[in-house]
Amino acid sequence: MRVTVLVENTVGRPMRLFGEHGLSLWVEYEGHRLLFDTGHRGAVVANAVCLGVDLRTAEAVVLSHGHCDHTGGLRDVLEFIGRRIPVYGHPEIFSGHRVTSPTDRYVGIPFAREELEDAGAKFVWVREPRELFPGLWLSGEVPRRTPFEKGDARMYVYRETERVPDPLADDLSLYAVTPAGLVVLLGCAHAGVANIVEHAREVTGVGKVAAVLGGTHLAPVDAVQLDNTVSYLKELGLDLLAANHCTGLPVAARLAGVFGERFRFASTGETFTF
Image 1 (cartoon, one colour):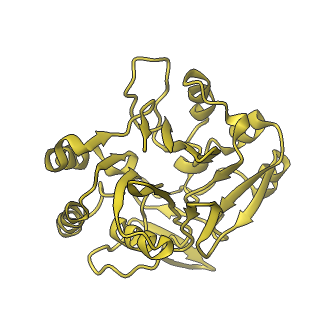
Image 2 (cartoon, one colour):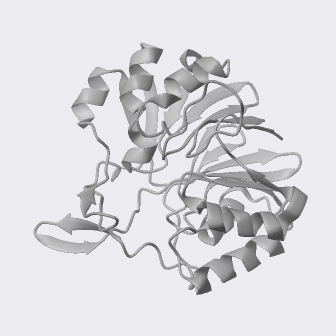
């Protein structure tokens, strides 16, 4: 299995790559290829070309959730691929996601569903865990069971005319079974890192977690949630923690101090082989 970071907030290689606030991962697993998220503003296409990744060989696109920094490059990706392709996501992915900080604004998918379908998207809705390829699972909705994972109070939606906290039920992750154990790929981990990992163990039946890679959404959480999450990750005995995007640089620096050589900054251009 190999994972290449096509888009992330930062660039970690001296190449003609573009960083943008967002995330996109190219996943190669047992001969299969898929794109997990598409970044924010379309840098994914140019970065893929620069890194020698042919997006046209993708068998599917998976959207971790409906925020613009994970879906904003989707139309460019579809137009580049130039054919009909399955796009997996939660049925609520087109929800009217909004956030209060740093300004009150809409942060959902910046395209109409019909526009994306015209560009080649064949949406496949996923609520329950789904095995995309043998050994590679899409999480489906992740149960929120961990008491210390509170979500992000800045995020909300409108239910008719009432403003309510955004449940972000559309938050999905990927679980890959490897000889070393589970590799868990996160989009933004709005469901909570611990909730996601425990769900991965239940879905796959694999107890050993070898690696966690992606956005942990630990940047905006309070000290209690951060401390508990770090303690939980330490107890997993990970071989690799490769955090990026919504983890935030201060938290990533803390994780680097805790995990030492087992930590990697998963910047644009980095590749991880399992």
